[in-house]
Length: 442
Image (cartoon, rainbow, N blue to C red; front, top):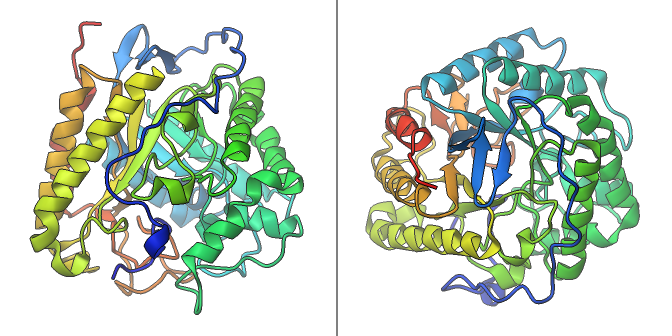
């Protein structure tokens, strides 16, 4: 039995397992084409199935680092020092793109949340929090990196859909585990109502209208609608929301790229209301993203990592190949935007070995690299950077005052974090120049 997390879908009979389902996109469309975007020097563009920078294909060796803007808040001197050390470590590993969280919502008293929040109450934006987003974006640009900025979240750890729904009068958030008595199924069905709640959507749009123009001339910023949005039982409304929200961002910043933040197919696409082809049809969505979670999706048990490893690896390779094929069908680049693997023995101790994780990462990087030149595959971003921070109580949940590492507050601290002393970092450092330096003939 897996430890519950934001990526769990343990719905028993509701889950659909097996091969990735890629039906036709008959019920969705790209919508009207967007006008040509004005040039923004230094920004990425998309041509066909390639990212382009300065007229040449651009490939991504990235990392997830969700805490950056929160640590960079105005007045948080220690946090800002941490951000610069973390970015130094990422750059030393050859990383050229960072995915981070540019939106946090809700009262800071709510459980298992990133705090302090940028939006502590609906429509109230904390100047110190907004300042953190701006400072982080400026620092990334100064270093010549790119950043994907998440603007919402299907899951509860930053507030996200659930908080917007609560503000909109939909009732209290039915929190999932680790909240006592929590249910992942009940929570997901609640937040799946976001797309059909006009007040909640408008509150989210208000933040987009506030923040996006402030960064519209920063060439390194890429916008993401939300972290891991799922259509659930409102797939039609979900697709309309994707298109409308992406077009809203494009109306405010036509020269910056936009993606969904989607997990792709997951292990239960019917339950989650997801289809990687259909979900990326909008003409305002520039590229496809997908995530991959072997342990969270029951491909492997952390209680028997060694025994289950061969099967989990085979499943992962198939999953990656199927998503590359789906991207060919859509005709857009695709990015493996999240993936991770537990430490040996399911340990949370930063000093514990990561032998199997390193084997898994080696295979995943190798497969992504093999697809770069011949498919729409554009890069890879593991979850998640912790740098020199360490959990004070490995395996326990985050509490205010604890350092931010790679594991969000509602997950056991140390689960998927990549620390600066992990052997995994050397592996990534060796792969980065090969990924970034991929040569293509077209």
